[in-house]
Image (tube, rainbow, N blue to C red; front, side, top):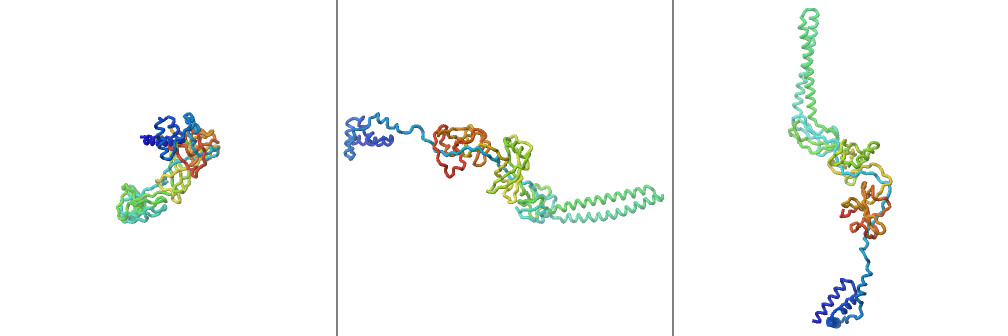
Length: 420
């Protein structure tokens, strides 16, 4: 039993030393001071058999033990953070939005007469110019009708010439009292009626020629043609709902985006004096243009106003239907308060930053005016010159001590506190 008790005490002493961080000698002295004498002799016997020697008799008193942890630091350790200075300087006034690319003209190609397709002169998806021949339709029936009406017009003109001669003869005979006035008037009326017949036939000819022109379908605008739904031999009708094809004007092109009410009046003020520049970025390339249209009514459901920018698109970087980020430049704000975007956190009460004062972090609520990439313009809460935390916010609370470290290689990249 002595061996068992000795082993238990030794194991307990080792565990206690590991968890308390105190010297083994103190633990040994403690059990010798408080353990029963038989147990102490048993432990010493075990230590001698193991070659460890007996426990030291001179060990710190319990009072000294209680004073041992006094050297440890009190309170939580400083939180390592990275900081940046709040600056006061000129900052661009930019509205960030997401816009959708829309063609200025999107025209459906449809048949205007009922006939058959006899030729397709463009490939699907091809770039076409205004006036290019796209589709030809069967025109044989219309050409025959045109020839028929032209013959009728020749007949009408011959009959009209005869009516003119009859009229002049009747007028002469009536003047000499050879014939009655009734015959004279009938001759005059017959000439006028023949004039009307000729005019009607000429109008019919113009109508047929117009229909004949519908058999050659040309591009109404320059742009790109989409899928061609009708092939050679297909019957097309004027009442068809589906178009033969669709032509979208690509260059220039529109980008439509919504401007919130908060910045709408700034936009309106600039539009009245200077062109408003717009930039759209897609695939690493930048397209430029100007605001061309502002809707005359605000959308009450979203509190925004629809704006369209006319963009140059010679390289066809902007494609109809694509969503693109848009930047609208309204000018330069002087003496603006600028902080790194990754310093701004979002909580239940709004946006805030951690400001370092006397080695401690303090929460300061801020009002965001706008965000421009890696920089944020603050309208309220900061004055400039403060040190704000840009990295390490996850472990911070208001009043926590901090240790400023050197910025890492990616310190300039925006990061968000998961609590936001």
